[in-house]
Image (tube, rainbow, N blue to C red; front, side, top):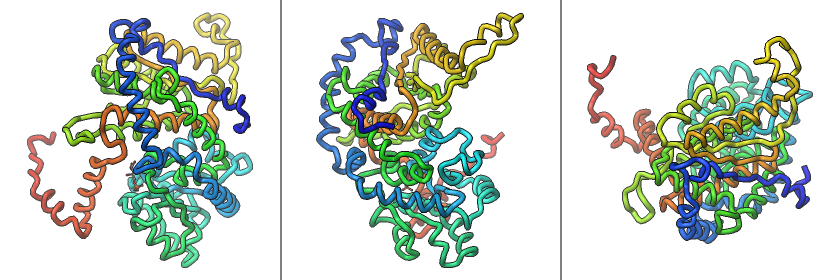
Length: 475
Ligand code: PA5
């Protein structure tokens, strides 16, 4: 991957094709040119807001492609050591501390990575515990050998019950098996000062990576949260950061015609204002299936807010839905084509898949089957992607396509940075706080109260005083 070469980088540029958002192609539900040009000033203001606040407050994520030189070297040498010493690598974390590592693993590693023979993998077997389902934890423990496993505990706040529960379970097992040496199997990724994990790291002497100030969970994939797991998998994290920096450069213009992230933000916000309350993210590539999950968290948690920055009530946001092409053509696409006009579909299309599968000739006496022979599966998936976009457009449904020349570390860095910028621009246009998550905190606090955490007695009393469920509503 020649990410230092300008020509190569330009050949890897993602593009956004929004023809099928426009009236000219889809009819009444589409935008006229004037609809978008009327938003020119608003878009430029959002661009300025993001440019003016780069690196400040909770916008530390904008600088991650540039300010991690030393950390990257530390990550690479730690990853090398992990690959040498361990058979398994497990991320303990949830939400923004888990979805990025899962998405990158799925996108850039073999789709059956863990089933490959060790000689065919570049790193240890890889798992992410993004839940506290007891069956999931038990299932993990059934297949790994804890003494031969490196556990990367990731939590920005250092306080999340789910992550700390996973940690307690694992630490207990490791300590019983390895005594003081248990610390060698744990790497912490957390805030440098706040929370419990940093205290535990200091107490037990865990190798620790820091989540920089101003980098919230869902914007943290390009810091040690995502870079360490990726490096352990043998992925080129410098190329990921180079891709992000490249997209940052591409988006350095305040105009929708030139800035793809701003274009996506404007299209989505304009659509939201016309009642498109659902944003479908539909990759036509299994490798990007979990990237849609990562995007859904970024978009939902950042924009779903009930108050504007100047304190006015609002109910902002758009419900993101993940879908997979072509699989979901056989389930959800019926709804997208004929159901309510409340959706915008974003396709993620890949020009060059990493392999070509030819469809052999056969069944010559059955023309309905034999026509497939001589083509490739690559041609088929591309045709189905094009056909679905067209069919939606024909039915007056807005959709646009983000096209990746191929899926590699560089283009993935581009894509993630594009989505982060798009979210930041959209948040600015909606005039909400893109970086907080009071709705998530509310659930966390209720959980603390239910499990008897000190300091949450009032919350517990509030929960106990809530009306009890009535039998008549239970069938
Ligand atoms: O984006 C966010 O801030 C959240 O989704 C968090 O990532 C999630 O709640 C986990 O938090 P933490 O990393 O503090 O454990």
